[in-house]
Amino acid sequence: MTKKESNKTVKELMHFTERATSPFQVVEESGRLLREAGFEELKLASPWSLKRGGTYFVPVYGTTLFAFAIGKKFEEGGVIHAACAHTDHPCLRVKPKADVCSCGYMKLDVEVYGGAILNTWLDRPLSIAGQVTLKSDDLYEPVTKLVDWGRPLLTIPNLAIHMNREVNNGVRLNEQSEMMPLIAMVHDKLEQENYFVNLLAKECKVAAEDILDFDLYVYNAEKGCLLGAQEEFFSAPRLDNLTSCYACLQGITSSVQTLDTLDRLNLIALYDNEEIGSRTKQGANSLIANFILEKIYDGLPFSRARLTDSYFQSVMLSLDVAHAHHPNYEQKSDPNLRVICGRGPAIKISYSQRYATDTKAIGIVSQLCEANKIPYQKFVNRSDMAGGSTLGTITSAYLPMRTVDLGVGVLAMHSAREFMAAEDQTAINTLVYCFFL
Image (cartoon, rainbow, N blue to C red; front, side, top):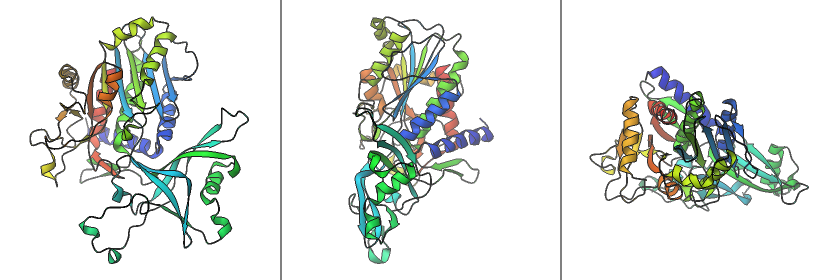
């Protein structure tokens, strides 16, 4: 790959990260890209009438999305190639009664979501995105509306070193009292009343009394950028896991060119709630993928009894970022298996099954990479470090396919701003593209 190709790909990712600011916006932007590629949107609670050679997508509860392309030669019991990623990222969530006023400073009461590195959220321009629920005539169908301020709106100021001389020795931040973002100066007591709901109503162009609830995420409003002497690096918010979501989307949309001769079903699943364990109705630790596949079989129509035959000969890529070797912390990496930025996506291996480990599946991905000249590497944690977990082991427990966990190496994982090699996005895009061909 050339530097020009690499920079073009990572600039497309940069644009995606700027628009995909919360799981709701990830699904909205993904839907837009899929529609542009000719995919038809389906309703989760409606019967599906599908055809071989068709391309479809279905949002699930607003923050999860499935998309699939059916080869014209796909038969019941045939092979499925699946790739999954997650739409959420560690951040701050706005509480239902958010207003906290102190000496005219209006702050927002928030809850930390996922394993965020808290001090990286200080002194940054922050904004808010998500979904608002509004009154309707149907008691069981309230109206929902997406909102994204799309501009710097908040910040969490650090305490001056003069007032905390120990700050450079490491200070634990209190998640309740010290992580409240500052949003305004409000001196009028009347203005203080329901300040945030009134501000939200104005942004949504609705009456404040029509707002029933909201699901809002505080996000880092900084833009991504290329950096390094040769612009070889990419720094941006939400790389975990928008790098993988974007690779899935590029792969599934590119696969339409081969549908006339394809004898497979290609499918992507972009799940919410990975950062808090995935055990939700829209998370990977649920039956939602099984239901989607059953609906696909019913919609073709195929015999649902043959679906298990598909599972046992299929392959799934679980895409999530990997821990890159940190040059300032040599001792944190396994001495023999270090993930180096710029050397391609990493196959993640854990014999305790924190990552899905199947040697034949790893062999499949290794051969796919070698056949298409895609650089790749392998990752294991140090034996004395537990490391994290991801989607693969969870998803393959419900969909018993051969599964491999892999992803691009990043530094500053779970920071408000993360870091990767620009050319690794081209490599993982190419891998998913080849997997779906």
